[in-house]
Amino acid sequence: MTDSTKSTLPDKTIRELREAVTPERVILDPAVLKEVSEDLTEVARGRAEVVVRPRTVEEVRRVLQTASRSKVAVVPMVANTNVGGLAIPDHGGIVLDLREMNRILEVNEQDMYMVVEPGVTWQDVSDRLGRDHPSFRIGYSLAPPDSSILCNCLLDGLTTLGLKHGPTGDWINGIEAVLADGQVIKTGAMAMGGTWCSDSPAPDLTGLFINMQGTTGIVTKMAIQIFPKPAFGSRGFILAYEIEAATRLIRRLVREDICDDIGGLTWPIVKMLFGEQRPTYRDPDEPIFFVYSDISAPREETYRAKMSALEAVLAEERGTGAHLVGPLDIWDIVPIEPGFRKLAEFPTRLDFLLDRGGLTWIGTYGPISRWEEGLQKGIEVMERRGFPPLVVTRPMRGGHFGVLRFISTFDKEDADEVTAVRDLNVELSDVSIDLGFIPYKTPPWLIRRHKDRIDPGFLALLKKIRSVMDPDGILNPGKWSP
Ligand SMILES: Cc1cc2nc3c(=O)[nH]c(=O)nc-3n(C[C@H](O)[C@H](O)[C@H](O)COP(=O)(O)OP(=O)(O)OC[C@H]3O[C@@H](n4cnc5c(N)ncnc54)[C@H](O)[C@@H]3O)c2cc1C
Image (cartoon, rainbow, N blue to C red; front, side):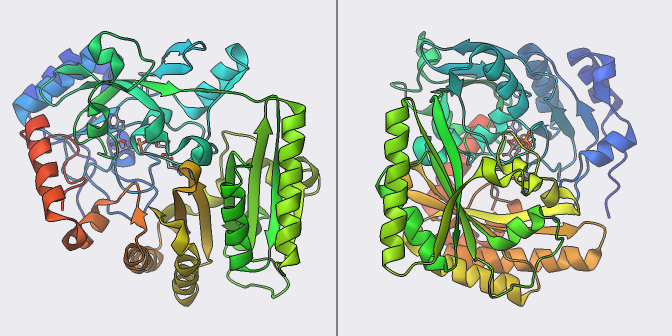
């Protein structure tokens, strides 16, 4: 195993880093280096040699200039909760910890955006909107409240508004970033002397940073869309006793444009919420899925009409023989089962997924026409390998594609469990990609394993772009690198 607690960087580089920020924000403490050298997943530990904590764009620029001169790797990181090994420093070097760049620089109600630095968390945004802009909202991921919203947008994440407004990469109006050589650039309308109100009509250079896992530049500002908050809304749950009943219901609700968000979660996830650790046993009387639906509207009559439409769809589906129970309002469930509060208010911390130390998934975006096949095959793989089938489905961007995510928790200290979960993810990735479901927040091992399936022209262009943006390959090396 590599020693993750020692720096082998030249003294000169450390000295320059201290000048670039301040001495106390250049950290060589072995405990800190160890902590940032791994994440929640089964991906092998890396080797951070120094942690640097900039507070300004100018400091980021100076750190990158030093790293470029010394040809030292730079791995940007905020909370390191990406669940893909995407901020593991597997080529040594500097971990650029951006948590102290945590200002919300602007909230513009008129043009419906906010401008944030990388260290701004979901909780920060929730607090700020709740306090100063109560008639606005964003969609929330289920990520820990202290993780970064900017990182989530760069990773094209999924939230409670993913059906209505698309993955979070779609919400970006423009960015400011520092390139490997220290050059500061802007994208979107702001690049043309406009404001942060839109990414259009400039050429979409923001895309050079989305899903690139920090390999093209360090994003120091991002304009993110905010959305009007409807006055009326609720979250309801429907129990489904067949996979097809759940997926057909979700598709119908999407087509009828009733919900802001819909998701289907397999029943073992609920059992974990109730406190069970490894719910592999399924009682035949238990539902297979629970489907949640968020419905909202600015006016009471519109909200009531949507709720009636939901009831009508459910009645029609039951008429065809589907076994569906509900909808049950979340606030009626919480007094009976307080654990459900974790799914009622956002941001939220899903402790039951984090309790065993290890969390991993094969999370994918793909064709919702193939959900049933994906679910059946994935559940079969998980059960055969002795893992509880924790699976999430979710339609995205108006139903044009959907999420299929297979989640596993494991004991990080148990080598056998780590190997088992590694093998599981390999097989799940094969099954998913065969069906056209492409893993998001794509781990480095997965890109290497499936490199022969990737269009060679795509890979060649990617390589060219990166060699222009980062000629020495110092930015998060090893990521998105077949
Ligand atoms: C329990 C749990 C539930 C989750 N649920 C969801 C969910 O529902 N939806 C979802 O989308 N995600 C989810 N996530 C994943 C993840 O937590 C979120 O995407 C989170 O917002 C990422 O923020 P972070 O601070 O952890 O990013 P990090 O892990 O620190 O960084 C993510 C990536 O961005 C790079 N990076 C960091 N800063 C910069 C920068 N300034 N410029 C360029 N690159 C940078 C890093 O190198 C890394 O590749 C979940 C995670 C957990 C643990």
